[in-house]
Image 1: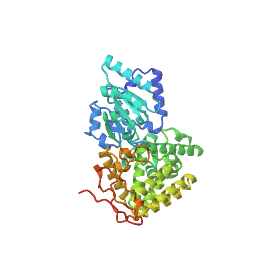
Image 2 (image 1 turned 60 degrees about the vertical axis):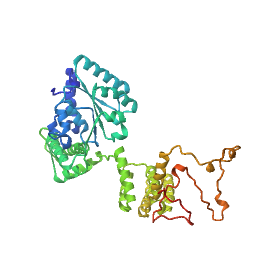
Image 3 (image 1 turned 90 degrees about the horizontal axis):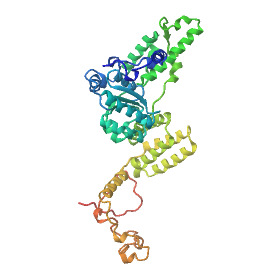
Image 4 (image 1 turned 180 degrees about the vertical axis):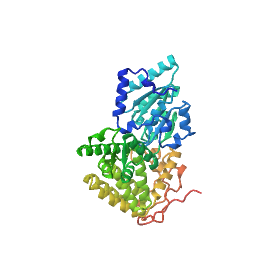
Amino acid sequence: MRPEMAVLKGETLFESALAGELRTRAPLAERMRPRSLDELVGQEHLLAKGAPFRSLVERDRLTPAILWGPPGSGKTTIASVVARHTAKSFVAMSAVSASVRDVRDVLDAARQRMGMEGRGTILFLDEVHRFNRTQQDVLLPAVEQGLVVLIGATTENPFFELNAALLSRTSLWRLVPLDRQAMQRVVERACDLENVIMEPGARERLLGLGDGDVRAVLTVLEVAIASSESEAIAGGRDHVLARSERRLELREDHIEKARSAAYARHGADEHYDMASAFIKAIRGSDVDAGLYWLARLLQSGEDPRFIARRLCILASEDVGLADPQALLLAAAGAQVADRVGLPEAALNLAEIVVYLARAPKSNSVTVALERASADARAYPTAAVPSHLRDSHYRGARLLGHGVGYLYPHDDPSGFLAQEYRPAEVAGRLYYDPNPRDQEPGGTTPAPEPLA
């Protein structure tokens, strides 16, 4: 197998020199990028010896794949290693900047390469979720025909972002955040590369910032090294700035100064996962957990109107008639939060969270609607009974519309028994009151369920 990527073949001396210079000037995370499978750290379920993904790469038989994982988990790094283990041409593109024409040009080149050289093409698409539907449709035939082996990298849930047709033709490989042990190995390698020693407290502080994102950790480390270098210059120790000779020492305060380089993730997948945890905590009547997830959502930049909408839904879905006031409070709180805006609106949302979490719970309305919806789907053409049809226009009575309808207000009790549904679903029971439901005043006879 060729040790270099196909796109490097045919480089001019100038391009080769430029590439070498960039490698020395590149950010630490880029200079730390592994060049072989054995150098990769973490993702043992994919990359350990004998693991399916590694076996496919080693045999150069990788099929179309989607690498799905959080930022800094190694998606681009894995792709770069694949490039060094394949006899195919390797072409990398960013879905952020690539146009439909760019995609067509790559496919045309792949077609020519296969016809003239008999060599296949691996197309790596970073941030593949940023491709719109049209661009994905352009790719689909080439992937189906085997013209290109697509490797897509995404931080977002591919089931939300990719065409079902394209997703069905690829293997989904999920990457996980790197654990603390893997992160420590990477940090130790980086310190050796930069000729840096770290105090134990600094190392612990650094590892605590990454949240599984090795790129974020290396970014903080690089900023901390720069801070230490500036300190050395101020102290008149210029000689330590030669990387091969220096022995910089990093303290915890260096890491603390650089921590602003770290970032918090909140992509679409995290959005739905946190929203799910938020709702389930309130449904489970855990006030503190509900407040925690509310705080997480707000700190990640979530739109308070989205949170308010979810609370309004929960007020009917999970509290329901056990406390009919819950919906009124949720709706009022949502309106106030929209008018007030953040940061004060957080108090309005927190009040609703506490109330809903402490309220009694009933899903009787939710179950009733689901039962009714099932019958509506099962009998979509069930005719409206004649006595219930509109009779307010000329000739309606001649058609039998409204004939036999009993007007409830004509009876002193305000109730007259009659059938209000088509024959196909007559007598079915949908609403089954929960013992916690607050029934309105008075009683209304309910139809008995069918045997």
